[in-house]
Length: 109
Image (tube, rainbow, N blue to C red; front, side, top):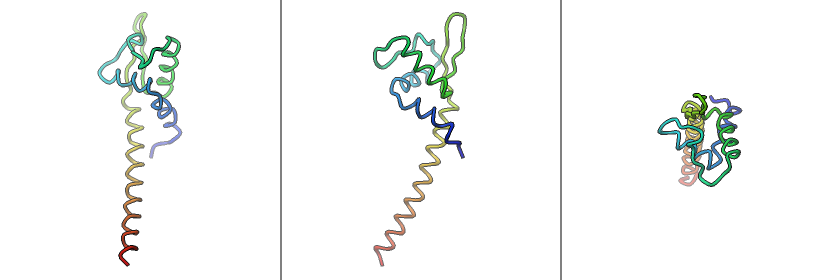
């Protein structure tokens, strides 16, 4: 079972459309921080803040190469969130199916 405490920063980071857009851009390949395109016009300071949130959630890695910083998507962290969602969905689907069967039985009596 996934420790929910570690999921908090992941879901917090994913809650913002600008940060999700950055992650989408990193799906194909690593990019320089300066090449990340925000969904809305924002200052360099705002972009840096979003990058910091993604780093704190361990959704990206930033590696310094010379004078530039290269961002890479951390797929393992996304899988952790996906595993939690899948497990939770399976749990509630089973519970709701059992409730449906019970209610169907009650209606037939």
